[in-house]
Length: 263
Image 1 (cartoon, helix red, strand yellow):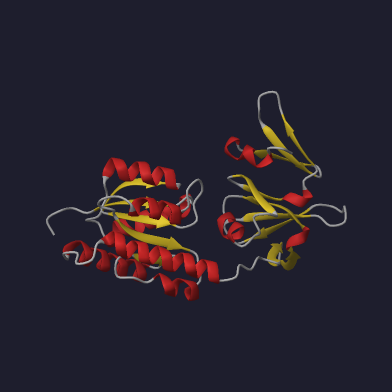
Image 2 (cartoon, one colour):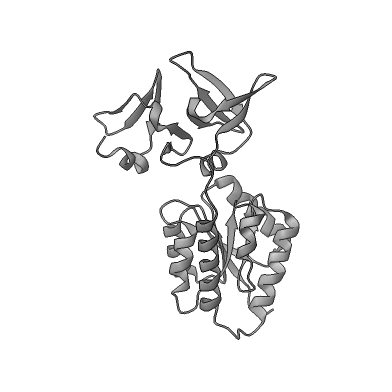
């Protein structure tokens, strides 16, 4: 096709964002990725600036989630084609399929991304008999119904390792999760006993998506705490806030200090 297609990648997880970027450069070198975004507000600003043909849009993002961002984009005169990126299981995702846009299920496979590429190229080459806005609105409605009707179940137990041993840990015993380089450490304390550290082979984002957000708060890019285990919250004269859990002093990022308003 004559016109070079352009795209934006939106995912708040740097590793996943880079992975998709690299996969696209290999599978679809003709596609120009003009911007990368970590939240919905950045997506809207980038779309306004670059007017891309395609947006790869993660559903679970901070500030403005993917669903809200898609609704806003749908109101534009000529909205981009949207490919939703989701960690929902296959059963829930079945309701998302639509010829207007596509979805990628995490972890993204090369074969699935290749099929998405072919679908997008075809959509960009064909005259549109039905406005994109109508088809995108229908897809968003289907996704909202699917997520509303599917009861949310939260993680109750988690498998973690300490040395060569595998442990089954109750979520109620978790003090906090902390992301390291390749692992996530989970710190556990029970009945005032010694705090123990275990390792989990999951990303912090994956864990957070399975936790009750009323009980576990992400206070920093690398830290999620069990709210019921917080002993106190302290703010220094410089404005830096810390959460204390037992003898552990955990920094709170400036962007997330609002969690503790009124405490």
